[in-house]
Image 1 (cartoon, helix red, strand yellow):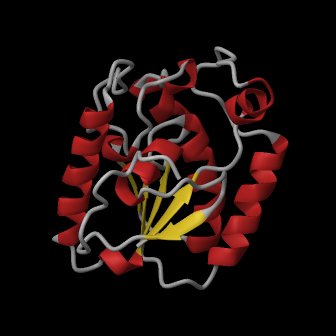
Image 2 (tube, one colour; image 1 turned 45 degrees about the vertical axis):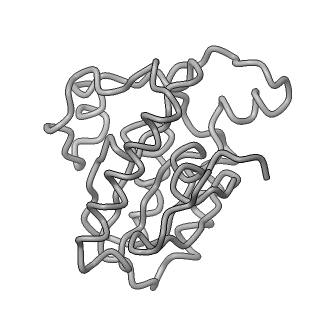
Amino acid sequence: MILLRHAQSLFNVTYAKTRIDPGIEDPQLTDLGHEQARAMAERLRGAPIRRVITSPYTRALQTTQIVNAALGVPVTVERLVSERGAFVCDVGTARDELAARWPDFDFSHLDNRWWRQDETENELLDRCRIFRAAMAREAEWPNVLVITHWGFIRGLTGVTVSNAETIGFDPTASPVDNPFAKD
């Protein structure tokens, strides 16, 4: 399986400069983010990916839309792979509005307010365990691309990745003992 952190968002560029939450709810991709997603689409074109799982945040959905234009595979929107609610950017967009913006994606299984703002690190790790176990039971997991977030990837792998960076992940391997230990 390939884990892909979404491309650069408005939050990412602002937070990187100030280290202060800029208060942008569910931010969109920047121009650079769109370029990163297009470059990633080209790198993944021809890869043996049969399905994309994506977070319901706008930055992940925009990345998914661009990447999947090159892949042309089924897309599953999955709250389990969303970011931990730690900043204002982790306030999501209501399901009905997402469905109107991305009519080709199915959001019907989500609550209208699907995100959490008070999730603890342990609750995030519980989501990671649930996702890991579910994917380990799927025979097709080696052919899945997951478009997700820094915190979720770190919770699964213990690795910090940059925007539009990928990392391989084997859900059948032993989990990382302390994924949030300092690098």
